[in-house]
Image (tube, rainbow, N blue to C red):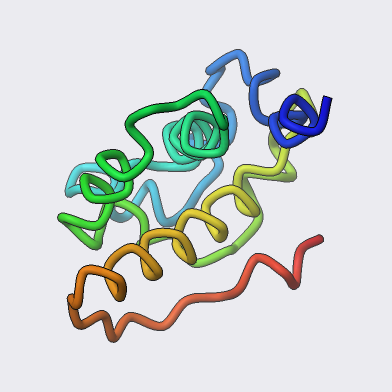
Length: 121
């Protein structure tokens, strides 16, 4: 039950993209490499799943281009727009922490500032 509780608020996403269309960072950087809130929520869903065998690979892919995750500025428009009352901003924040930890463990230098998701719990 513990493992399934970690996925609460993640697997309910129906990929309607309301969060992405409400996100100013996605408007400005979506054509570049920023993945947007809907995709980041799904990425966090898989990375958080204890059954996932590709967690390290997923984190490496997200960290390979820092704009994929780090263009999220925690504006929270995505969370307000979600019709399922999910929190993509929190998921993006946790992903930033996880990618940062992965990069530090690999010895990569990461100097990007980010907002901690702990402020949104």
